[in-house]
Image 1 (tube, rainbow, N blue to C red):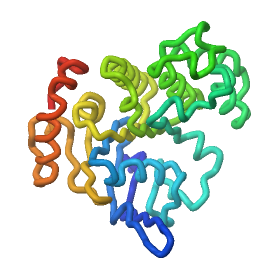
Image 2: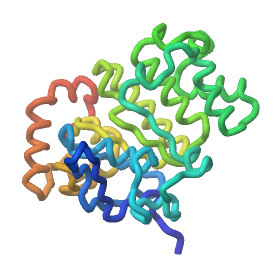
Image 3: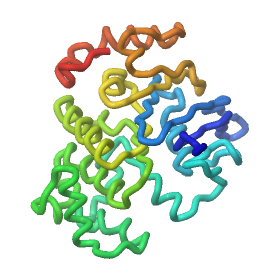
Length: 265
C-alpha cells in the first residue's frame, strides 16, 4: 500500500545554543500531513511554530530520520529537487522580496536557478494565478500594496509547481480585509493545484477558515491535534487548547466576523 503521508515528523527535537546556554525549541514532536491536506499549527509566540516550518524546509538542521517528505527521509542537506518540491512563503512580504528587483526579476530568479525555460510565459501565468497582471510586472516592491506584495511572494513560491507549500503567518502583516482576500486566494490555489500545505498562525479564526486539521503548540511541545470541524465545535480535550480557544473567541470575534462572516470558531 502506498504511503498516505506527504509530510511525516517523527520525534523531532531542535535545540539552539546561546553562548553556554541551550534553548530547547521543539521537544519530541510527531505529526503527519496527508497529501492534499492543509495542516494548521497554532500557538503563542515562542511556542515553536515557525521553527517547525523552517526545519521541514531544511532551513534548520533536523536529526536524521526525523523528517520524511513523500516517503523519503530528509538528510542534513537537501537536493535542488527537494527544494523545488517544497516552497516557503514568509510572514512579511516586504522583507522577503528584494527591494531593488522588479516583480519580473523576482519571479524569473527561481526559474533561472532551476533551469526552467519559457520564463516569459511562466511569469505571466504566475501573475495571473494570484490576481495580478501586466501593470504589476515591472514595478518594485515599494510600489505595491501589502496585499500585492504577498501575492508576488505566493507567485514566486508557486512558479516552480511545488507539491508542498509552507506558509509562515502569511496574512498577519496585512489589514483584515486584505487577509480575507489572501486566504481565499490560498484556498483556491490549494484546490486547483492539489497542494499539501502547512499553515502557521496565532489566529484560530484564520486556521478554521483554511485548514483541515490543526496542531496546538505550547513551549515547543504539541499539546493536541484536532480536525477543524471538532475545533469549531469546541471539542478540544486539553486544558491549554480550551484556554486558547476561549481567548480567541473573546479577543478576535469582531475581527473574525468581519473577515469570515460565514465561519466561526
